[in-house]
View 1 (tube, rainbow, N blue to C red):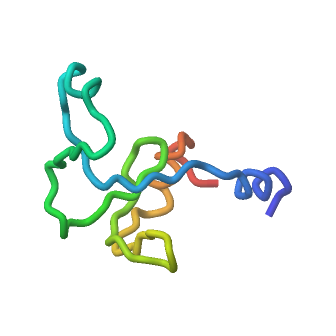
View 2: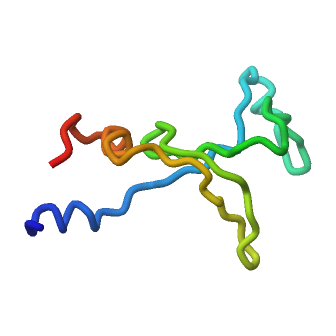
View 3: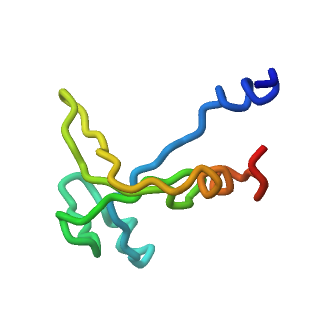
Length: 93
């Protein structure tokens, strides 16, 4: 593998786990405070979306890892789709 590819593969990218989302008027967002509850339009037992660059690349279930939360991946997109989600070309080198 070339040095350039090795360097690219070592880059760190933000990985997000989307629990859910909702839309609210700005007025409601501004009124949020400690103790407020925001209801999400997703059942509590549904899959969580695994995202890179705001694009879904897989999904899984929430798990507890020590004192932290994690995601147990149950579906992951093919490498080509993950590369595209990270802003790469449509061709895999």
